[in-house]
Length: 182
Image 1 (cartoon, one colour):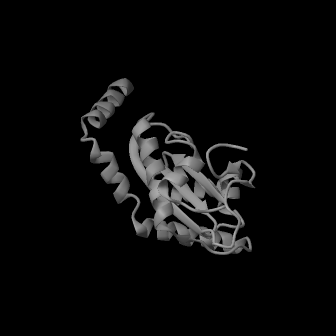
Image 2 (cartoon, rainbow, N blue to C red):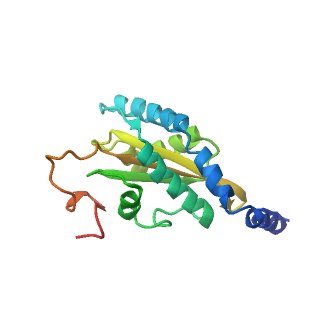
């Protein structure tokens, strides 16, 4: 019976117009959802002595592209739509420090946020000291037991100023800006 249900879901997804997932991802990248996520993250950061974050439209687009890429592939991965630095660059994001949280299967933005808080690696990203802005989005896609939500959160520091050195050096452990690692 489970395989029949999986077949029905996959058949429905395959029959969906190509833009259906993209339209849903745009809907799920609503400014109000990013603003709510920014408020939750800011309150969490304040309790840890850190500054607030605000929703950033460029980061929302980057998060939406990642959520949509995962949904289309039916797989949660940081690399599904390209490396994190290359995806940020393609989205027009300018930052010296950035991080990303992804998730799959949670049923609400609040549930995704609570899951990230409970995971040490994701929690570290939420508490990134230089973070000042975020982008948040989700998109529906095939999962192990039917359609699930794929979640993406991008956090970044402020946009570079003209008097700051150009990007290219390692800016935080595990993250390099540009086309590959040094």
